[in-house]
Length: 397
Image (cartoon, rainbow, N blue to C red; front, side, top):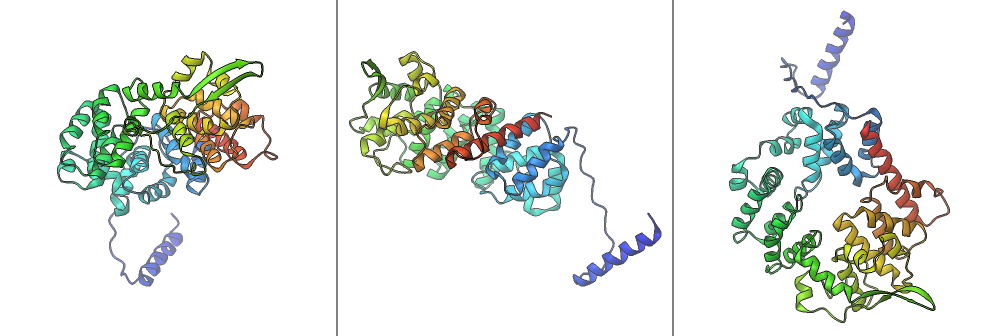
């Protein structure tokens, strides 16, 4: 370096130290970060991450990080401080973004965490051991259980079973949330027992999780109820969907998570319509393709009159919970073709679908629509699907 430049740099550092009220001293060099063999994401993917950190579709950040981790790619070094600061601000009760940020940040993230106490969650996740379960706080116990569930699902399930009686309602909710990853029929007895828990939210979460489990007894019970609600009739007026809502909500339905009270975006509906929505949302979607002998797209094409908004939201909830891409794609296409999204609840349902459906399966439909002249919910859904499509393509580079 040029001697004059070096002298000016040192003078500037000394001036800053004096203004800050701290005398200049001997600085020790920082330890080097461990080498990380994983390559950084492509420049295009890095630019999109910067856009999300800057406020554009921030709710898609977890999906970006999940895709990067799955491809063994790393966050660009210059974006790590902003990412870790964003992860620091999320609730400790929702550690997913913190875990993904730590994984996608690699050794450089751990190096930064040792320099900034605000980012200690990165090293805490890596260092969690059995002591974290016995002696740690809520976030440490949650992190330990999540890590154990990843490497040994059976051991995590046994630990939950042993700890259930002594745990309070909040911790039991954490237990159920922890087993949603890698869910299998081996988890069903634990969740079925939770349906009889004293905590209302514990019972509801257990029912919601069981509704996503293929082959569960709860799914079979819901299917038997649902089959009495819908049928397809052909007559002189053509083929149409006949809808008969449940007559009421009995104790068995309540145990399976169906609520008789109205809530969310369905306050304007009557009680029986609300029950129909609750039943549809928890019924395995294969129930309908098997019963009617039609694909999801063909079922949605059957006219259902005034019941269309309820069917749209109920089936959408089921498709998202069961991660059924065929149904999600068909439901989005129904909405794009002028389907029932006119209510506030329908618009919110479409918003959620656009964030969970495979954008590659919807690519042809979304590119066929102009940017203007369509309802705002549909326009927003198209924007999100296009953003996610480009985002995932860039992560492949």
